[in-house]
Length: 406
Ligand code: PMP
Image (cartoon, rainbow, N blue to C red):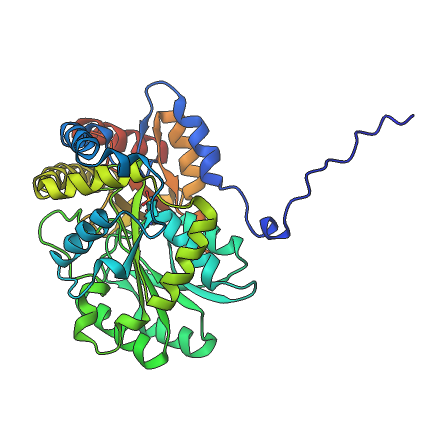
């Protein structure tokens, strides 16, 4: 007899050793504290969802073709939705994208996973922005990617640095969030967008554009997406993957994303998706198709843009007033986030993690920026989301943040 616990029959795949559960998740456990004002989430505001429009779209989907809405469907996606999504992109300048050039994915998160699965062999180099979307870092690492980072400033990714990295390391692909990036909030300039496409063509490098926030601008529309610009740069469409999502503009719960990619990649991604979830919920796809066909989207976008713009302005003003020289940031022109850096002025802390812990005690939460760096984390950075908090609470939250800073 032995009192050893029997060896666990669970023997995890080696690839899991490349990925840790995120520090952010630990922080989220503290958010249940009563009275906390949270700038920590990455969610859109549920109070802004067009519930009535989605209810009508759901009923219309069931009335129009209940068999199709409730049956298994094609892995590539529900054709009426693919048509609507092609039209949605065309309205934003993406010419010549046919419904067959895209597949519907279960959120754009699945598109990122399919990109990792189809392109990354263990040890392959992938270039991402510093900072970038945390789930992308983790997803690409799961497939064994070695991540290199290109710095981001107020004009988006530094294209000269990107050029040097590409020439030196010949990456499998480059992943960019050119418009209102999560977490950077940055908007890449038109000139840099053109240069990215030219660089892609010249160096034969695949560029992945992740664009879930482009519709959420505050005043003027951002420059065209890389996809929309690609018709101006000969040969660039063949170097481009574009991921879109209805999550931030309509509802993340519907889990509707999509991916435009060169045909040879789209075919392999479709094959992998088939093994993964067979297809994205036909019910959700039929509902999204009806919603887009109903013509309600422009008014919905107009409404949510105005609300997020006012919240962003309230946060920017409060940060300037309450934190002054202790914090440095570029006011966002769209999206859901203010990305900021503690300057350490007047002997205050310049450690985002430490401030996050103190802030929770003061009743306000945010996410420290360090986990959003695939390498060389900048500990002075913070991501503050204004999306789900009204203006008065934003001002109160920033006052608490100032109190936490001391
Ligand atoms: N990309 C970025 C940059 C994001 O911020 C998010 C959501 N936070 C996603 C992709 C995934 O969104 P979804 O799967 O809901 O489309």
